Length: 373
Image (cartoon, rainbow, N blue to C red):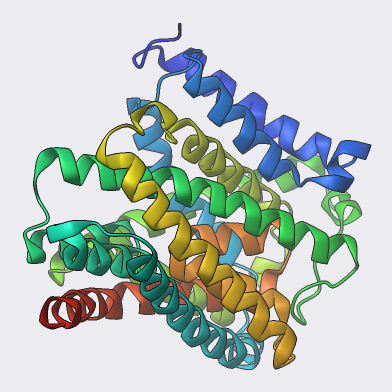
């Protein structure tokens, strides 16, 4: 009904869903499911019954331009002392999450027969569920997993399973928050803090912060291109923002409302992810890949939660690490920010970036190992 080029209408819908996500958190419904999950469900439903398009230029703008800005705003609370304290448990949890993905691949290979493409498919899904979409593409190219029908089917399955997995993680994170298990040691800003200072003064500082965030995003992107690693702009973005947050802590402390704006942008990201989950594309080979991917992430989640309970590993860190592995740094930071786990935003980003670095090697290694067996 709404066309991909109906930019104003789509922007309006995204912003209204962001507002709904915040407001529903304070209702009875929000006690059972986080607002981020509810708006994602609405987005999935809207796109799959044809109200909104599966893909649109507006979605690309949100992903490419606004998500980095949201991450910058969430990172402004980062303090190196806290990062060093939180980084170790998150990175340990990330190693567990990677092993959980490999366990999932082993179970999926044993449970299903994908024929001649099984080794390549296992390598591709191992890479994407340790790194992210960029690793899906890179390992697919490396292994010759490029037949258009097969590639499209695997990508559709990955998108749908990823969206559903993210909702499960957000529900689990919401349950932790409802139980009062707040993340990290950084004090979370309270709503009443936003009322400090003159309204014009707050608005001016907030505008400067958002404008600077866009500038940092652009600089990070240019640096990544200059160094020949365009897919790693988030690494430079993180380094620049964390450095600024620790060099100018007093000035940044006066920026009221930046975290809320960052969370709002990440809510928009969740909406766009929901719009892009195309259940209609799940036909033919995509259904096989759907089962394959579902087995991997279900096994992954069982192993991650099992390790958390058996070895008394911190659940917040495990969920963020699981998110960083299966979905990537942006969603890990988004989940940590949305649940107000401020001290886990930066470690989650670094874990996801580490996944980007190692996933290609692991994916190709898995494919070679299965090809030789």
